[in-house]
Length: 358
Figure 1: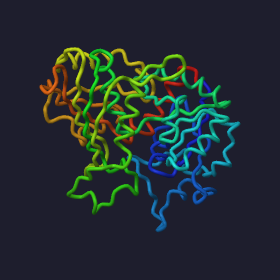
Figure 2: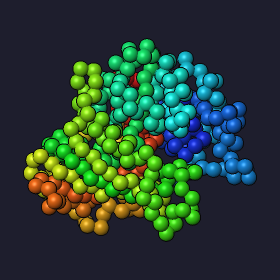
Figure 3: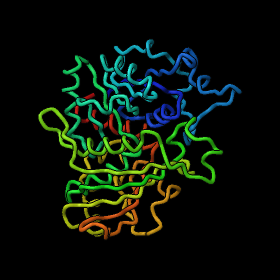
Figure 4: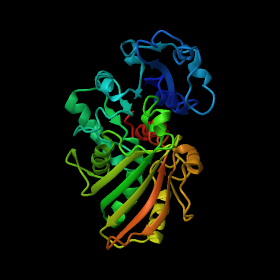
């Protein structure tokens, strides 16, 4: 089949580089145009990612794919949208709003930014979790008179929480959640946390993170009804922290449910979801969407971050929670730079492609 022609905006940054890697030799998508800031525009990609001393700044495991090395970086205004089927946006939120609005007028946009997450006609999609919300994209196009649409990923901290809550919410009526995150340094980007600030330390506050988790979790687990998403009736409280881990977010979760639940029932539920998950067989999907550990020392970031190519969500330390009449506590691990970012966006594109949205 003919591959869909895609562009990456913000291609020189950390997330943009993850897109470059995730789209290498993709069977359905081909990167045909790339864009970044005026500072990088006009340069070959290899020159655009050199730091001032001339050293190539490549933040992704593995070699730089050959296909991208000699491509010329454009400005956003120089992109030829008539020759594109899809845009991946890896732009910081302040600039993302204007850029994504401009692109969506002509072509679908999948974004890692928060710029459009909280609009009523914009779904926050996690492939395999709330695929039915994709129908809101058609309403969005009509509302805004766009040829395309904007589909943002959730905050990377929300991703693991929503993925693990979905089966419990659907089957056991999860109604209250208390979560503490232990988030990797890479989640803050290159300029997020200094080495002196994070070594031998924990930062107990990440600006705006906790509010994002609360709002996004309810929206993702909500129901699409009469052209709108009705937020899930679930109360979420969280504390988001930064810890000296390179990649991967770990979260400690307490869940109160309406129906009786125990660790064995939870395990059976996650195993059933593994068999029925809608994204099974898509090029970027892991063999197992959920990994369930009974070893009390798991999950651990260094041991889990490569599982399923970073696309598997790992659950462990699952125990009955005695503070609630019905409830569990567990630890989850989700890779913020893979499932929670560019590779998750590529998986979303695959799901939307199969739904004929691209």
